[in-house]
Image (cartoon, rainbow, N blue to C red):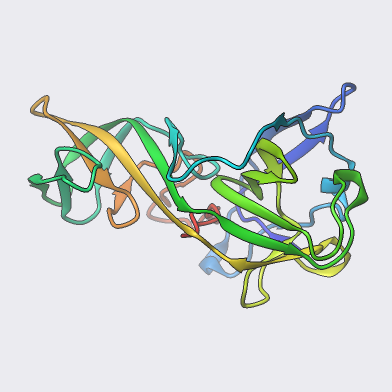
Length: 239
């Protein structure tokens, strides 16, 4: 069972077996913030999908995923600082701080990069014959894309988008029931850096794993003064 307030990401497979994704935003007024919409994802949906891949060795590390915005609804546009934010001259280890934004300062998110220093690791708890996976096999995960999809590699195949919603987190949370087929045994090490333009025109870089901005999530809604609306929170970027 998957609780998705104020809307749901619905997924379908077209005639060619290619995964298509469309967003259905469902208005949901929650008096006193006590109720939300319950959306149940179809069991076994991932098992009916045909997911394209490239035959190649495992990616060299670190892996740079340029222009990635790592969750559903993530968007590079105007952002407002929700807390003080440090701005650096580069994302590289040699970086130096060039400014600190005050609360309410506005910047424009231009692009970004998700860097995988160590991939996450999912171990299969049961067979997934549709993907030639057997119990005990492992899947390496790289950039998380949101709504259960990630960039992955296994058995000599690199998938730009692969449904990993069947995997439980190390603490056992996540998927439930017969849909579960694997468990994260290592979350890996990843970092997300965003390239931003300040109002002064200066270009800098922000560590998005530490920064707090409003406006990054297109699916986030601000409640009117007299109403409470449900808010859909994207899956967090796992390090």
